[in-house]
Length: 218
Image 1 (cartoon, rainbow, N blue to C red):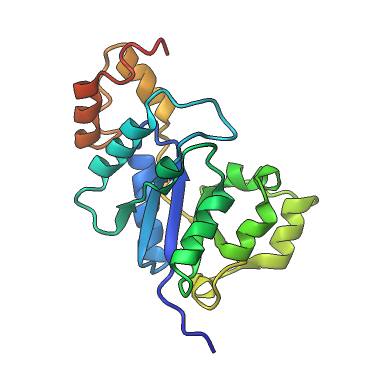
Image 2 (tube, one colour):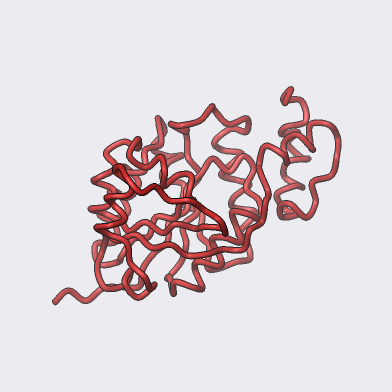
């Protein structure tokens, strides 16, 4: 029987900019799911949304500043280095090769789950990783369709299920509902308002130093 290593969390996004909503979700799931770490992975080029305002290098730097003093969270630049459209399947396949004995837990929100069948090679993602759905109260799940079928086949009840095999399960886990949006932060900065307490001070300092968002026409 294969002896598995401690599971690794994966949280991808544009992080334009990274904020406390992202960071608190990552830390809470790290603790609740007994993960070895959570990889924060800024995308190079998002597939399902418009291009970020900050450059890939700036978004990577902001993420690095955000987690500088939190050893549970590690910034991974694999998508920045790879360039091109950032498909999750490419990232989980790469991490699977590098971590053949560790379960991988791809952290997504409920909205992303509802759109999961539109993801590039979505079925292969579940061959390489579990899905952890960071949810908030009062979410609605479909009763028919591909997502409903996936939940019937793969939904698990406890975090321990993520540690017993390398991939293929789906787990819902609640997180603190911090209603913070990157677009709101960008708007506040663009009109000269202080976004402090929505994102780490180190990130805001970097944004001011490099003039990000202030002249973006948001």
